[in-house]
Amino acid sequence: MSKPDQLLVDVAALVESGHSNQMSLTVVAGGAVITGRLAPEALWRQRVSEVLADSARLSDFSAVFTATTCKEGPPTHLHFHVARILQGTVGIPETGGMYRVAIEDVSAWTMGDFSYSDH
Image 1 (tube, one colour):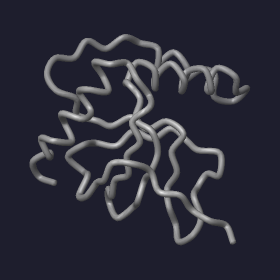
Image 2: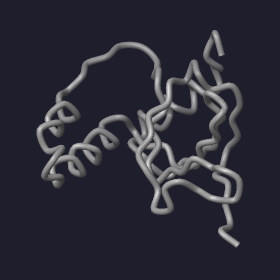
Image 3: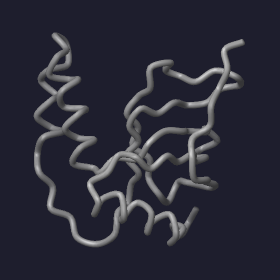
Image 4: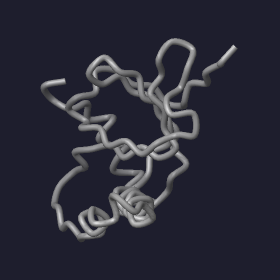
């Protein structure tokens, strides 16, 4: 989208203000279908930082995600937690991942997450 969908921006702002990670959303961005739960950016950053801190090879990057950012205005990104990229009948990764998607890159979206089957 050249201009972000205001309704999607409003949904992201509500997630940010409520500090909730219970809103399920599915988006199409860059041709990829991503499904999962939205999280406030601060919670998302904290979780990514924890995962990186536990890695022997990537722990140095942990601090980048704990740096506080003071930003004004509406949200510009969606922060997915327990998310999957849907490819055919498979969700990648199986356990869910942490994805950050620019709202302006979303070409379609729907409330809720899609299930997938490995059968």
